[in-house]
Length: 240
Image 1 (spheres, rainbow, N blue to C red):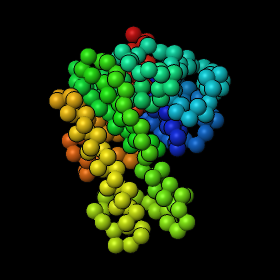
Image 2 (cartoon, rainbow, N blue to C red):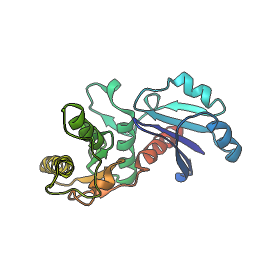
Image 3 (cartoon, rainbow, N blue to C red):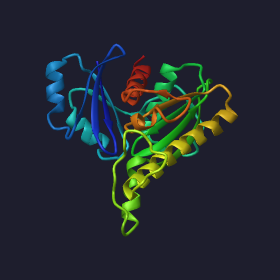
Image 4 (cartoon, one colour):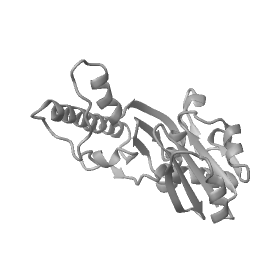
């Protein structure tokens, strides 16, 4: 049994996988007591892999939190793809996991993985398992926050369930501008990638994907556990 730890910019999530299937998962505030509880309930737990995009914990610290399991960092593992990234030491662990999930779920496909989280990341993996890189832009919450932070009078507002085409107040105008801006960015990026790769599977995932999935054309809406699936496949790939 594998423990998957996803330490994001906003939340910490854990997942348990057995024979490739997700058994349980949850969001937590702290790692205190997690190992004891999980080992007691799942005595076959043996391996753990983590992705820490913030660099909040050192490997040594996580080994101390999970002393009874084999703790693996992503960068210590072999990847099921060839990377053309010029600075592999700076490639986000979440992006590695998402590319791995795409290879597992859509083998022999050219895939563009879009992760709509704190940042929006784009990652391109070819059918031949060559990772070409991608792009990074500000995410939904970051765009809303920047308007209030860098201006004197604009308020901080939250996203609505669906993008408005225009607003009839300052609040709804901000909602329309931010959400429609992201939708057009995504559609534009997808069109540009499809111009280079005529056969392309586009996967949309991340915490804000539910706001965008009905508005962005020609995408496959992946469930929030897509990144965890990638981490688990990466761990199994190395164990095998």
